[in-house]
Length: 356
Image 1 (cartoon, rainbow, N blue to C red):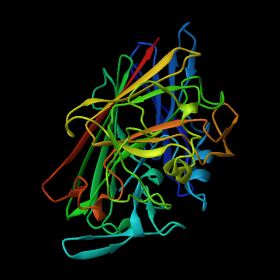
Image 2 (cartoon, one colour):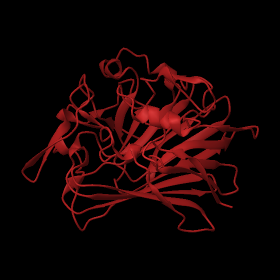
Image 3 (cartoon, rainbow, N blue to C red):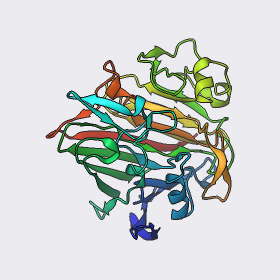
């Protein structure tokens, strides 16, 4: 069967959560949860055929529930995040002359939609093609949730074709709003729980990135990577960059920046690639989004225990989050994230697994 489904627990509100496993018979399997439309595990073969789970996650629902309700903030392991991924400065924005106030984090900003956002919902699952390794998950965010206007209907389709996982988002609204959706999986191609990813080799097809202030809010410019340690246009060992004393890296405690991907937004183009020299596993990301947030797990502090039973510490995973640019509702020079009635937001990202 290309999709198998099993119970994964029940939320405190009594909502059953399922785990769906995609298997197209090519050696890669992807486990999804209806809680948070979450990528819980991805098993991929290495150079010698040994398969390992390369996605950080929790072994049971309780781990996700504790993390997503943590007052100190969630790690968003594998989750679908929104209604607005990344940050909105000042936890507020103005749209069509109306100011909307959003739940603020301790820095006074909104991060990943705020508490109770899409990563905490139980999504409805359907199998649109019983002969394919595909699951469609959908949910509704009501008007006013987290302060956002409009009732937002969201669907995300996960499709495994051979060794390629595509993630397709669709969203519609009944009133003007702003939307930015992404998947927040952390990758460790050596295997989840195996240690840090600082020996991974990364490449990002971006000449520019989004500089940020001390609260990680964009300064309003798109700066060149040329001449900075944020330049990943050629294959780069991550450990040679993350501890550089560059002001931006110090603010982020490592890499945690939106790269503006070369090429035309809206077209599927290669954005980033990572490789683990020890196992030979590779991952190439293509996306239609204008940017990709590259995050080296700088705030993983050992308080989370993953599926392997080992704690996650700083640098133990690398997130590649295709998305619009942060704080776009307050940055008129950035591509718009406004969605209006009658329009449909669509985006596609493809994660291709390989071996060298």
